[in-house]
Image 1 (cartoon, one colour):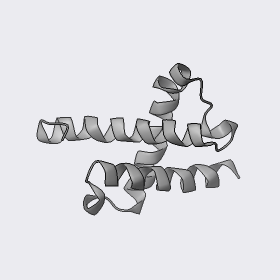
Image 2 (cartoon, rainbow, N blue to C red; image 1 turned 135 degrees about the horizontal axis):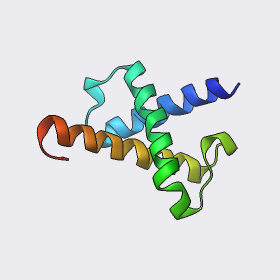
Image 3 (spheres, rainbow, N blue to C red; image 1 turned 120 degrees about the vertical axis):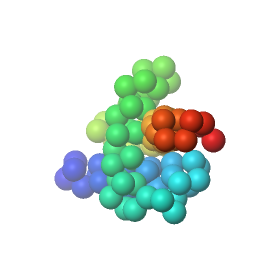
Length: 88
């Protein structure tokens, strides 16, 4: 059941992050899921301890969702930096 939650939440987080970073037309659903999952890992590792938020594995809360979204936005900003030379 955990992998299904990761896929669903990862897809939603990746989709929202791609809208925020204006990359929605360039990504498909698979890349949105990958960005969401990797963003959740980055957010849980970097931002989670700072805010005292749990990860998606502990349960889906507003704070864990926000931490995952911030991590996905950071991931897309890093990708934009290397591909275009600016964060946007």
